[in-house]
Length: 180
View 1 (cartoon, rainbow, N blue to C red):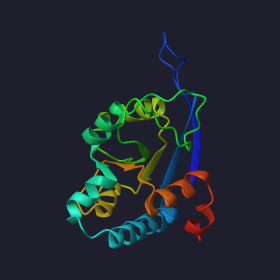
View 2 (tube, rainbow, N blue to C red):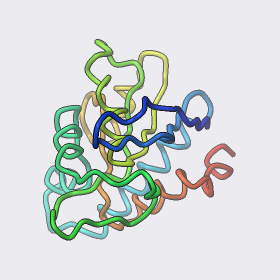
View 3 (cartoon, rainbow, N blue to C red):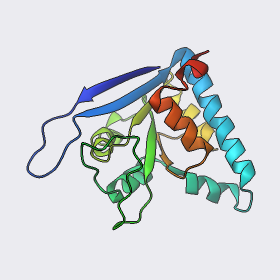
């Protein structure tokens, strides 16, 4: 797994911009174990709640597609740059869905479809996790959510085992066991 911090442009006017937004990239030997661990957590979380049909349950856990991820990010309140991306920041004035992280297929075509997501995610302090697998990353990402393909999947902060796994990956606690 490779994580890197990138620097965004300085803020314009009163719009705060996060200067260091973490990005993670899974590719090669680390990709398959990462996706399998997410799939395992999805299946175990789904087994705990069988009252809803699978399609509705997935909709509650994930924002699927570039448009849905963009819509959820735009509805999220902007978090001040001093807040850490793993904090449990909740704005009591605006009850909305919060994304914990966004999985993005790095080989989407055309590339402009996801070009806006890094800046929008940075303004909300939502980390990006890029899935890189030659020309099959959108297929692999789609398999997670029982679709043919997916370019972007937002993981909603619901406090379940899926969120715990993603938090461990973002903090770095789970990196050794995923890579092994």
